[in-house]
Amino acid sequence: MKRITVFCGSSSGTEEIYTLQATLLGETFAKRNIELVYGGANVGLMGAVANGVLNNGGKAIGVLPNFLRSKEIAHKQLTELILVDTMHERKTKMNDLCDGVIALPGGFGTLDELFEMLTWGQLGLHKKPIAILNVNGYYDSLILFIQNMTDKGLLKEVNQEMLLVSDTIDDLLDKMENYIPPTVGKWIDKKDI
Image 1 (cartoon, rainbow, N blue to C red):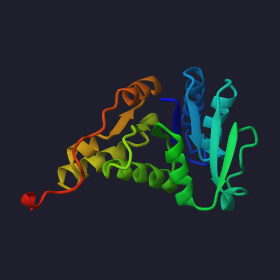
Image 2: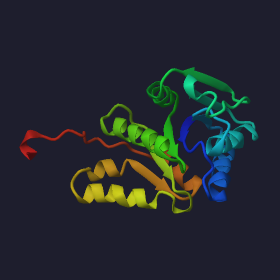
Image 3: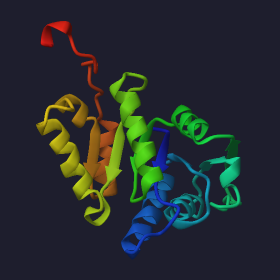
């Protein structure tokens, strides 16, 4: 993987470990020669992951909608800042630029981005690994909910397995490197109805 998109909060959250792990993820990218693609801001966890990359000689590409330029405070030291008009264009551009996706702790925007990438993968629009760095159990409840979706028959197990999860960076990157996308499509055969 040459480039990974990271979705995460524009806030830092209540636990210092979120910022520490975001920074460490950026440092790890730089050491592994992986370029960062992210939302382009200099605040919160977004700023931490970018600074982790940039302060260690790595490359960081930001993708920021024009209307968020003042709210999210565009990072001034990026390798490249790409400005787009809409949130949808942002997600599309980030997908176009990356070989895989990692979600760090975040809010609605992070979940929107994560689930859109999962949905695109489920529909066969890409075959990229999609992962959660489950910092300090942040995503435990979401992981249980996704298991519930599968248990209740609303999500195929093969699609549930598309979401890679780990609480350590190196393990997560190893899982992403070894990811094999599902060969089963989302669609239901008429004989199954």
